[in-house]
Image 1 (cartoon, rainbow, N blue to C red):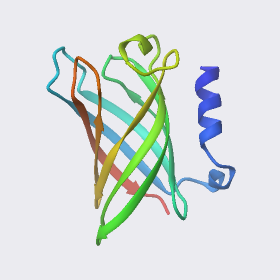
Image 2: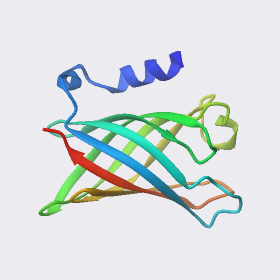
Image 3: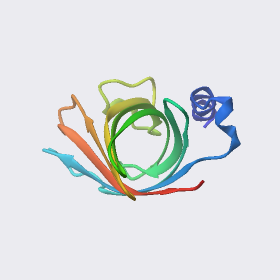
Length: 147
C-alpha cells in the first residue's frame, strides 16, 4: 500500500487539503460486450476537491475483480446546462494482484481515462478500453456537494 499512498500524495495538490467539496458514492458498473464475468456491484466512496480549472479526486471501491482498489484522478468539466456537466478524467488505480489483466499497467497500478457526466446528484463515466475481454466500462453512482 506504500505505492498507492505515494500516488495519492503526488496527485493531490496541497491547496486541496482544505477539505473536499464533493462526496461521490459509486454504485456499480456495466462492462460493455464483456467476454467474461465481472463483478458489477462496485460500492465505493470518493472525495473531490473542485479547484478553479481541475477537480482532484481520491477514493476506494470494490473493483470488478472482487477486491478493493484505490484511485486518484484529475478531471476537467464544463457546465452545459444548469446542474448538468460533462467532462474528461484521467487517473491511476491500484488493482492488487490484477495488473497483468490490463494491457497498460505498471505492476498493479493501472492508468484510467474516460468521459464523465453529472446531472444533479447522479454521475456516470465511460471508460473505453483496448482489452480483449471488454470494449468499455460504464460506471454510475450518486454525488453530493459538501460545501
